Length: 386
Image (cartoon, rainbow, N blue to C red; front, top):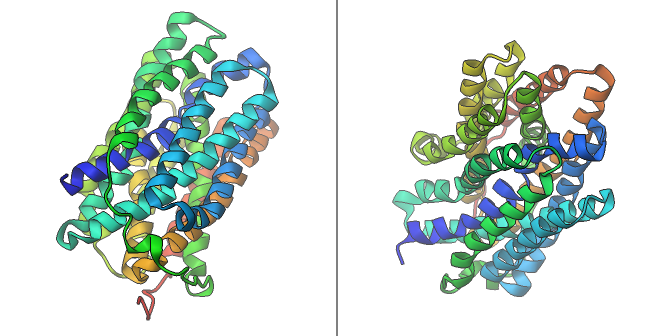
């Protein structure tokens, strides 16, 4: 099978685990918050517990890959994410939903770390197109965001207040259909990565990069958790919410072409700095108002950079580490990212409860992204990449 098709099928793992499993929550959050009587802190906790699961999954991922292989780790992780969506539809109990969000995070991390390493292995066989092929994998979450954006707001509009659980069922059925190619496609041998001895990973040489990626995790999640509520608070109905969310998803499809030259920069953290800087600009635009045009531009600018930031970190790993170290290195970056997104939602929710406005919290989100971009600029290329 053509490598692009293999990677597009692999991208169904983050499509389900991240694009739907994590991010679709923002679309359902306003109705869940109203129907279940949650504060913004409680609403933020649901993404925090999801991030805790993602962090736990990232900590376990390298071990799971060594034991079960890349492809099996991707499949089981994505199956867990699908099961979590069904569980969200079954109960309004806070703790049941918390467990479902935790499971979604664990599954998404396994699917992402395993999928990224397997995609890097496939892409490495075609070095002249490696960064483009990797970008196809990172467009996966955009597909999930686009699909959920076209479904969730209109399901809520059709069935009225309190229909959040119907949305979860619709997304579960969509994910069941999406996972079939992932389960049925043979990816060949898992490659040298699976059988290689565990590679050592040293934090000190990439500490500044890890901190920058931590700030990305903390900053982006506030935007992706609360922007739909911000659009709704500004008077945006189902069409406006769907359009805003879909624009973020659509922008992912531009990523492989727009950023391929930047992703090919083998110069430490500069590629991440450039992309994360654009991401910060997109996150900052809603500070200036609720204008539909302004929000649309924000969604496009944020989205076109958001998916590429993660791609830039895998490119960094590919340039600076030997293949045997890729799963461990990607997992380490994912852990830093996971810690950031664990803290981000509940902190932003608490700030919003205290200040009574989402605008203040969104300002902090954009600032964290900007600081993260600056820090990544100080990351040098590693002297020994073998």
